[in-house]
Amino acid sequence: MRIDDPWHDTLASGRGEGDGGLPAPGPGVETARTRSNGGAGSHADARAAARTAARLAVHRSAAFEEMRRRHRRFVLPAAGCLLLGHLAYAVASVAAPGLMARAPGGGPLTVGTLAALAQPVIALVVVRAYLGHARLHRDGTALELRWYAQDLARSADRRASGAPGAREPGEPVR
Image (cartoon, rainbow, N blue to C red; front, top):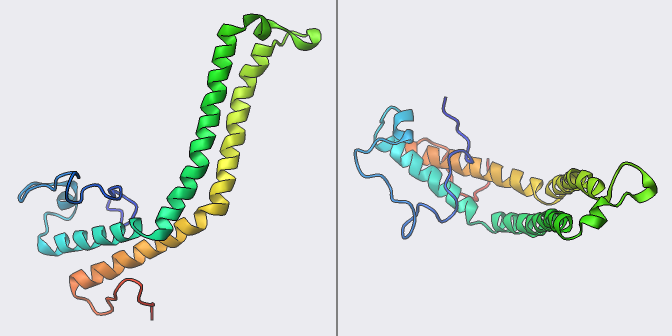
């Protein structure tokens, strides 16, 4: 089953293009793409090249870069804090066994047990914060970029097939 989704089976921006990227298969080399279209020749190749150009246009857009920047600005500090918390728990377990063995309130739960039980709770709080951040700051942009990429891919397909109604990227839909 072929999935005609612009995000499916795509290369990361900058990979597979020219210098330092993955080399393109030579002529006569069968790839997943040529197998999926039955080895069809130039029309399928032109269509694939047009779709790749559309994807690269989206990956190079300012909106995509802004979305990636927002993602990194949240994920890197959040992941660092989680890792630092896990590392602090492990170091405290080894360096201060007396503290970790202390039972606050005289019950059966020790500081070490409470700290261990807090680890997944903190991870769930960070995941919830990530989901809220993604919904507020990235999902709208991602949806707009997806629609834009699909529109570019459809227009590229029309241009490659010579069908009427092909338009250039950025041209309004009529």
